[in-house]
Amino acid sequence: MHRTEESPLSKCQRCGTCCKKGGPALHIEDQPIIDRGGIPVTSLFTIRKGERAFDNINGGMIGLTEEIVKIKSVPGAAACMHFNEADMSCRIYDHRPVECRTLECWNTSKIKAIYAQTRLNRALMVQKITWLAELVQTHEDRCSLERIQDLVQNRASDDPAAASELAEIINYDFHLRHLAAEKGGLPSEMADFLFGRPLAEIIPNQFGVNVRKTD
Ligand code: SF4
Ligand code: SF4
Image (cartoon, rainbow, N blue to C red; front, side, top):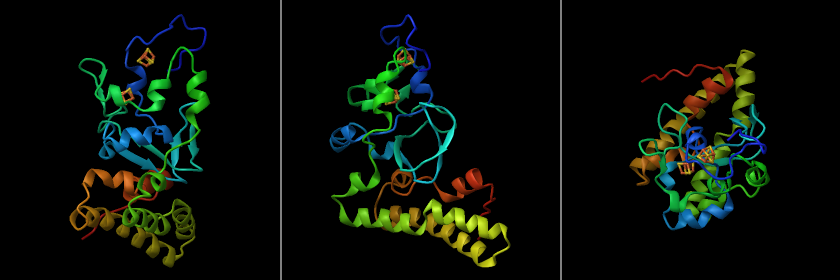
């Protein structure tokens, strides 16, 4: 992926390096593929506005100004979950998203041109299912990273109300995921798409605040 325009490559060698670095972000062009089931929604997750994420084009960690919907990695590794390392193939090759179809590691100008354009987001993806759109928005309103950052700062200044609200939000995020599966009948694998990654993971990683589960 990091080879330059001077690279002697002129076509994909199927080395799998790009797939091993992580799944692609999705764009509006990918919605029809999702609609026909080519990319399972259960294989997606959301990195929400305000979260820190790696900038694949410019490198380094950045705070996201808009959310990204991506294909998940295999547990405990970076590789895209649709990458089959045994034969270096893509399990959804005929339905692979636009970033994968555009990436030419020997000429990165094409992927750079589309990378930050027409990004898909949850609101666009669930807009036709009103109750789901409302559920996603309700969670976002309650658990925005902006609010969490404020609470973390106030908690550090020994504000007990901030500590208490932060705990409430983490509980809310935890229970909503379970309720969506148990009462709403949604596959539990959809939770990280609908609500982003669990706050119990994001808050320690991004803000350095330990989250301890109690009864
Ligand atoms: S695009 Fe490049 S890095 Fe990706 S599989 Fe092909 S040769 Fe390997
Ligand atoms: S969707 Fe397929 S081509 Fe794209 S990163 Fe995953 S395994 Fe590679």
